[in-house]
Image (cartoon, rainbow, N blue to C red; front, side):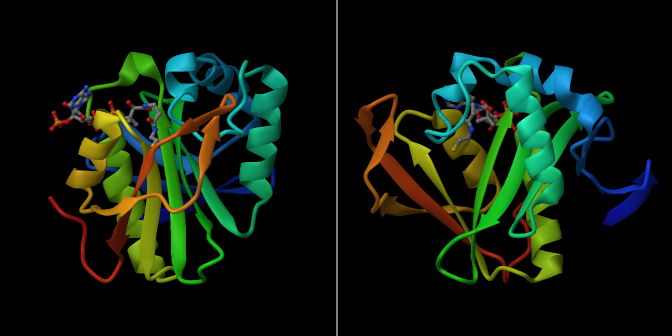
Length: 188
Ligand SMILES: CC(C)(COP(=O)(O)OP(=O)(O)OC[C@H]1O[C@@H](n2cnc3c(N)ncnc32)[C@H](O)[C@@H]1OP(=O)(O)O)[C@@H](O)C(=O)NCCC(=O)NCCS
């Protein structure tokens, strides 16, 4: 269930997750140091889209937070654990109207704690209740077993090879497309 709060005139959304120490909330300017510290990591960068900054500077963090607060066609939320923003989960509209494209990452120090799964379940349920998209999709580069496992737990199904040609750092990458209908509740 989403709740909103007001901070310096800026409205903030909060989504609880199944982990009492983890919530999703609107990015705030004060998250810049934590965002920069967690995101400036090649082991995160390598699995994300070409435009994910490397190095991830404070200027990049400020730009992301401003974008996340402003965007109308996307919803990008901080994954907060123990009070600190340690990751991101978001959705943006695709050209294919009722389909949303989701993306996520968690700071490496927090991998394996079930946070991407907890964040994903809360986020998918929120998008289902909001009824803006009929279906979610995402692309996973070959070899990203942890992400495929998370998607499996969230009820996503592999659709097959990604139809677009994807490049990372000038190299062509293989990827698979996963999708999930929002007409059915989150898998447990
Ligand atoms: C993918 C990512 C978000 C997972 O975050 P996380 O919080 O560690 O995920 P969870 O703890 O919720 O679940 C990870 C699952 O993958 C499994 N896993 C992790 N590494 C694995 C590996 N090498 N092989 C098989 N399974 C693996 C874990 O065991 C766990 O499954 P389980 O609950 O059945 O044991 C995180 O590794 C990350 O941010 N990676 C870099 C960015 C990225 O890949 N984003 C997604 C792009 S598609």
